[in-house]
Amino acid sequence: MSAQTITRRLTQADLAKLYASGEKVSMFTCYDASFARLLDGAGVETLLIGDSLGNVIQGHDTTLPVTVADIAYHTAAVKRGSDHAFILADMPFGSYQESPEQAFRNAVTLMAAGAQMVKLEGGAEMAATVEFLTQRGIPVCGHLGLTPQSVHALGGYKVQGKGEAAAQRLRDDALLLQQAGATMLVLEAIPAALAAEVTASLNIITIGIGAGKDCSGQVLVLHDAFDIPPGKKAKFVRNFMDGASSLHDAAIRAVAAIKDGSYPAPEHTYAG
Ligand SMILES: Nc1nc(=O)c2c([nH]1)NC[C@@H]1CN(c3ccc(C(=O)N[C@@H](CCC(=O)O)C(=O)O)cc3)CN21
Ligand SMILES: CC(C)C(=O)C(=O)O
Ligand SMILES: [Mg+2]
Image 1: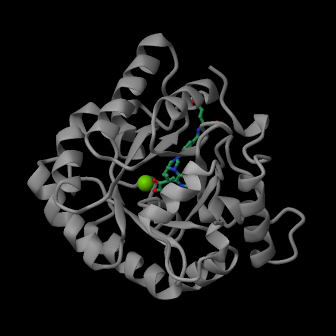
Image 2: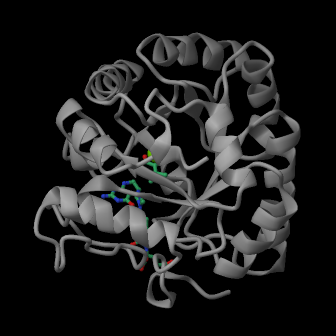
């Protein structure tokens, strides 16, 4: 069954069925009820209340100042504006790294605001936290590769997983997150071949952003996809307003391009 024929809100089980059928999963970041209504109406299956709101909504240079209260506020708005899409909320910087207990407490706030799953950045060092949350009823999405909350440790927004040592660390991290109970995994800014390999090695959904065409799905940052300023754009950004007659039309085209595999194209993709 196509997700488009389901009229109630999608669940984790619906996404798993989509994945099992081999259909690409579409995800947009979303921060308010208006865009939630628009994207929901275009058939976007998953809405991510990303901590990228620090950049695109709040005007910061990084995601680091974003708080749990900020994400909860925007999650509640997105939930109110949508009937259909699965709701995924980012855990912001400093809300989960300290301990599994801290992560649980803050994840509860986001789930109470309407999230159906929370996302956190990191690999092996977060496995115990992922296990703690998933064993207590909180579905978790991992996030590997370019993890923007670590921008200062990474030395900038740079492609990750280059070279055999870094690639192997990413493969190991992905498997550890799956074993810890994560049921989705975002792969950001890594070589396409590595993302393809990781996707093939897992039995959970991978969502790519700058990770090539062979992930199980793709996430688009709303403001980048709709060419809304400010925008120094990464290589993986495509302006879906180009040739579109409306925001609704651009969203329809974006979902179609994810589904038919025309996005991401080679020009949006990093080589090894
Ligand atoms: N609007 C927006 N879009 C995003 O994708 C995004 C945010 N904000 N905020 C948080 C992070 C920051 N992100 C970024 C920012 C810049 C690049 C970038 O310019 N990458 C270079 C890589 C060059 C290199 O590796 O040396 C590129 O050319 O694509 C990538 C991801 C992704 N996230
Ligand atoms: C770009 C996506 C994956 C994200 O984490 C965000 O928008 O914060
Ligand atoms: Mg994020």
